[in-house]
Length: 412
Image (cartoon, rainbow, N blue to C red; front, side):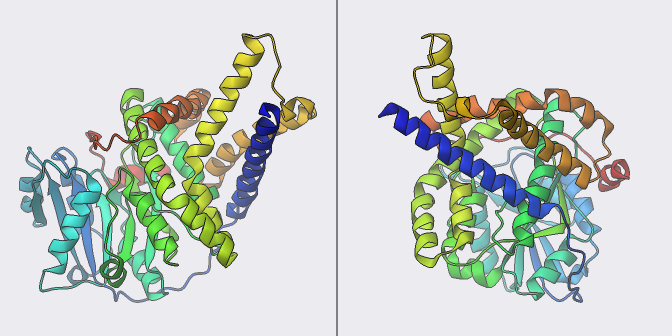
């Protein structure tokens, strides 16, 4: 019985790995033709902020420089339970500081839900809502790109999330490599196949009519994934805009990174429990590969957990109990196939960096310790499984003040 279970799970995990690798190949080519429209759509730009006085000023300066008519967008900074000078700095830049104080309902999802209610009550109504984090920097063409997609019929759009500080430490470099891979070989591949993309928490754009129709309703620790699943279940698939870049600050230390990723994984378990089976059932009834793909993405946290547990059990069986006593299909495969699988996995990250023309020299040196970052996801996910009912929101402190010109000069 145990052997049959292990073999079945190994076959399923191997099939998923091949499936994901096959999909990544569709991100190799970037389509150049796209339709451009004159500025037409109006935007409410929401910025989620909690004690961000060190970095919010740089974003305010950045948003004033967007290549988009200033009468077609307004900036609203959600000063959520702030105890510092965030609101003061926002007002000094001539932007709207929207102060929220609620010690019970803490977290970005609740802050957005509150802000949208405030927004709907204003005399002016906007065509779309764009969301950034306070530590971000937006490419000058960001709103123009969102305008193009909205005019083309898109209702939910995710921009390209890049890293503004990839050379600060080996951890920020690891984030950078991961996001270059995700943007190119995960998001772009789905976009090229006209399938659904997933939201990444910042650099997001939503049609106002859709938000009013659906409501926000995404208040878990991963509000981006939750809204992705909610909209997909209603047949509204997020789109990816490769050219709409937003630069995000990444944690400098392993400890800060682990805390952030633990929160992500705890939230992922919550969303997976709530949406995986309904979305999977919809994909079967509707014969929808798009919904199946999103359901699989939602269950990815369980895939990581299962891989970790099975690897640990097989290692204990072999090392402690002088095994193997448990069936292992990989032991019957040619050794070259194992090397090929590992090599293909490593190659995808290097390939993504090559395709994205990454020029950060330090990042290539930090690749030597990149496997440590990848392996650390396993214990983090394992711990998240047992603490997934912890809904306490944890803030990632941001201190890295960088201007858009600095980021772009290093990419040339």
